[in-house]
Amino acid sequence: MKPLGPVPAGYDTIGGELAIGGRTASALIAEAGGTPLFVYSRMHLDRRMIDLRAAMPERLAIHYAVKANPWQPVLQHMAGLVDGFDIASGGELALVMDAGIDPARVSFAGPGKRDIELEAAIRAGATLNCESENEVRRALNIGEQLGIKPRLAIRVNPDFELRGSGMKMGGGAKPFGVDAERVPALAKEIIAAGADWQGLHIFAGSQALDAEAIAEAQGNVLDLAAQLADDIGHGALPKLNMGGGLGIPYFAGDTPVDVRVVGDRLAERFDRLPLSLRETELCIELGRYLVGEAGVYLCTVVDRKDSQGETYVITDGGLHHQLAASGNFGTVVRRNYPVAIASRFGAAAEEVATVVGCLCTPLDRLADKALLPRADVGDVVAVFCAGAYGASASPAMFLGQGPAREILV
Ligand SMILES: *Cc1c(COP(=O)(O)O)cnc(C)c1O
Image (cartoon, rainbow, N blue to C red; front, side, top):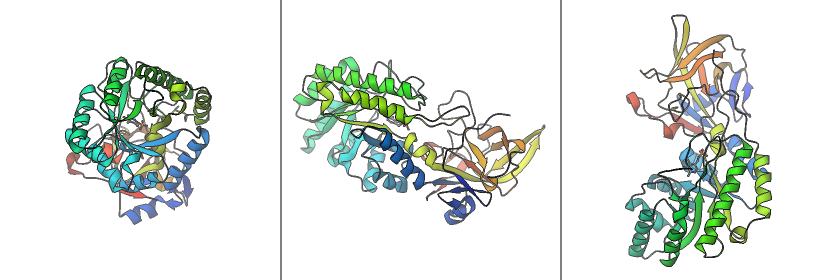
């Protein structure tokens, strides 16, 4: 038997079934027209932001990293909750503009921005978090051709990283950002060219659960930004995107980040900022922390069988919608996400079963040797923590399966 991850708070049982936002899984499936289905809960999205705002210093702006979940209804809902949006492609720029989000609230990071993407962002008035000297020069040229002052920030490749980070994106050689020691010269070039200097973006890592590690990384970000601002010598830094890093518990033994500790430590730092950061607009950018626990993936059991003493529960879902839950999205050792039998959410666990998808590959595993209530054909399986890096980060076209349905409740 292998343990399951912890089911996030705020999910109830109604009539023995999983309920999301006060509605049963079967009612939601009927409304959406079937499974596989992603259900996103407004109540969870709202609650998460309320709690986060309460924990963080008022001065800290909160941005949403669109790549976690770019689905239009989710984006539109987030537009009413967060202060800004971070995008990573021209495609995401189009999505935020379709959602009616003011591009002045948008910053665009990501290596390998093509000229056409730089142009679209400059025309729209979004901030470019430039990832290289070359990119700065291309953006300056495009701005000149368009007769628009580009809004330019520099993404810094910091020389430290967030401890316990799920995905390493800072410290050492990286395709992301400009090495810290080269940033002052590049910032001076941007300012001398007459562009609209927006400041710095420093992202040290992702998916951390240890509040002290996050606080330490944020302290390092503030120290580095202050040092760079002094070296740039252009007075106070206009903006500083301090990165993200807050994770969610996916696996057995994971515990939620204590955001009050992160907020208190940040407030202490904000009380004694150096002159170069005292007037700076400060933000963090979060993806999975804001939307991950608000999503549940529902799929229907289409078969069950035994093989050499092991029970397999076979669903109409799979890794084509849930690459991360299957353990194939940047994980070294496969562990079980929080998975439940939604149609028997109140029932006691009674058998050890492996829940698989409908794809003809051994990688397609939603829960491995998990202790669950018995699931028969027609029962519904729920995979939690499905709000981030689910639908848009999975190969929906693999084996001709196609996308899942999505619904916001
Ligand atoms: C992916 C990414 C994020 C969001 O990461 P989460 O783990 O979803 O919070 C934030 N900033 C940058 C630069 C990213 O690449």
